[in-house]
Length: 311
Ligand code: TXA
Ligand code: MG
Image: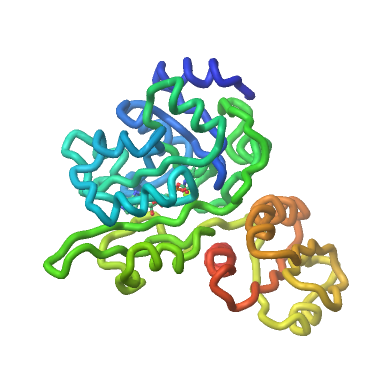
């Protein structure tokens, strides 16, 4: 069911959930201070209760409502990357609902860079908890139609067009220890790690996380159709037949089956990736043959999502 901005505001204020556009993927939003509304998010998504939600805020001034500490490093990153596809995990204030935190001592915060999401946050005065608007482990939605296809016609959707980034936000935790401030990359996104490193002045702490990231199961972001990844085009072509479909990420010889070709730059592929996987899934093939992207930093987030989808 499509709703307009004013209907979305009314529904959210009354404790209902509404799917909203952001620049990364559509989120299933609810008032982050309303536990009953938050429980609906977990129920609709069939998401485990220990998998925390990101709280979307209108601007940086709202961080103090949620975070017990907003260290100089965290402030520097927030100022540089918000609004944008960047989420900060910070120590939570005690009043922050343990439902939104998934039982963690921290809270994840993001100012999204989407005109409708920002208008919604500003006009409603709400902070919105919003995980991606898909069932647990399934493909994230990048259009209003994807949301309805995945969650059903009864879910209210605020249509903001196709998402411009197309892959979930980069998540960074900022922590303090005796050696000073550190940062850890909890989830790869299209904001390059090098940009964060440059600003922070220090590299990320070991990618092997020292803090718990409950949502990052290897099985994630998956189409219903099984997927197999190929580094070699020849091997992919050798597996193609009438019961397969393929995703190609470069030019060259093509397989003898239905295929989609996304062979531009990484930003462009990211923007179209989930929509293309949704379309491939709809073909009801026996298996999807997926070409892995080039081995370069700007492709890492895409490789991460494809690896999880194929797990
Ligand atoms: O781009 C995005 O981040 C989208 C849009 C809607 O903002 N949201 C999104 O939410 O991808 P979700 O719930 O699908 O993924 C959020 C992930 C969780 O799986 C979890 O790993 C991590 O964020 N997370 C949230 N709060 C956390 C916390 N307090 N500590 C560690 N990880 C946290
Ligand atoms: Mg998700």
